[in-house]
Length: 205
Image (cartoon, rainbow, N blue to C red; front, side, top):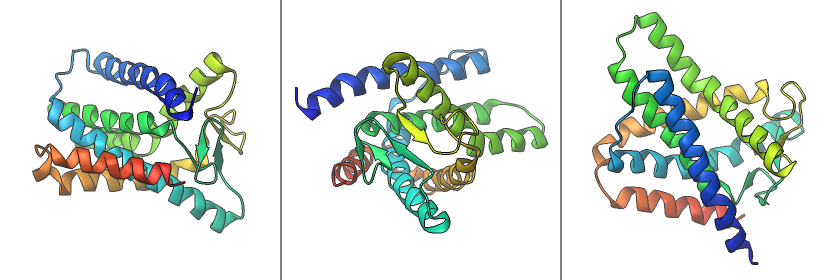
């Protein structure tokens, strides 16, 4: 079985499982079934893939330059000096789903400004490591191995407090990108171009 076949066999079920966990998790939190606009969702997911992928590799190398050691390494289909994985063609778009669902609910929630700000900080800095922890826990149960391994042991090597600043910067940047390109959200060519860009970068490593 070649690499592409293995990626498809693992990637698509992983994508479906991750989609279900994130979507129904937000539905439970909102206490309602969240209606999805497919074009807008594809816009979020397709942009998230190359944006998060390129920043992931960039932040990994930046951490090495600043501290003389890497913060994490991937253990399943690693590429780009083990800073990411070929399977992330299916994983990083899910972060776009997470962002999209939050943005829908944030518009509808009637909350005090302080609480809205707290939730926004959680969205930017905390949700990423939480999703990482869940992903690694599932990989441990299913395959008895880490998807990515964090060298610090503060959170069982599943994720690390040290990654929070990187998620904050990346998530804030992604929010600005979504806002800046919002006028193109209905254009079918934009998700296609964005996703192809991510694939080219991913397989170049």
